[in-house]
Image (tube, rainbow, N blue to C red; front, side, top):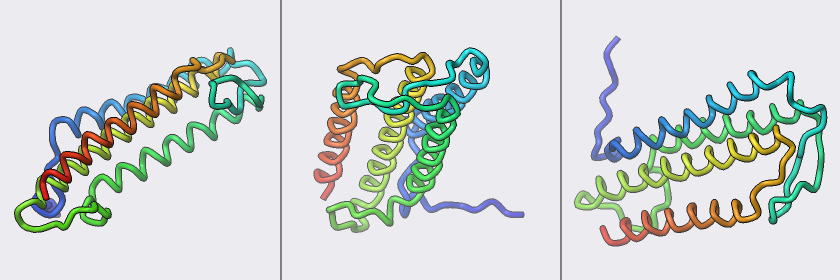
Length: 163
């Protein structure tokens, strides 16, 4: 069976940043799964099921609900990994031509890997705090949103500069 060769001009390059961000994202998912399995017997029967914007617990659920959070995290990881491979289907807001294609698509892939890493990290943090029955740090939501939107802004500026 021959190996499929992907034209990096069509899909952007897989940079070292992408490889590292994807590895970190995967470690977040696998790490929290292992943590759940290892600590399962010690997890209380009722754990936080929802947090408000201030990071305070406003609903409790069965400890089995932790699997739903992990399933959502895994589904997001998978979907984001697939989407990362096809930046050519995204609406970039920039007209793609032969001159800017590689830069735009590589930057989009970098942005997707960055967002995936941030989201996987925050999901793991929420799961970890839920297992411990703790409130989220009140500033954690704010920090997460700043990291996501500032990161996106940096990548988008680079895309728009490549017009």
